[in-house]
Length: 81
Image (cartoon, rainbow, N blue to C red; front, side, top):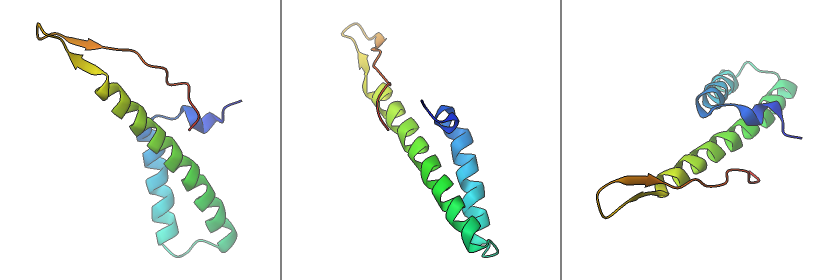
């Protein structure tokens, strides 16, 4: 079963990650909370990396045809992150 965070968009995950980094950089976060935020940030970073990799693959699959038209080839995104 996939975690609910795995369905986040890149923008949402990045926004949450930026918020976590800002709070961690403030220096006012207790150690226990700091560790929890670090763990959550790591998960969000993996989500962002997966979304960027998927976007890169989609871009690579755009192929220009001889007549100048562009064709998009579908690919499977059901892979382990």
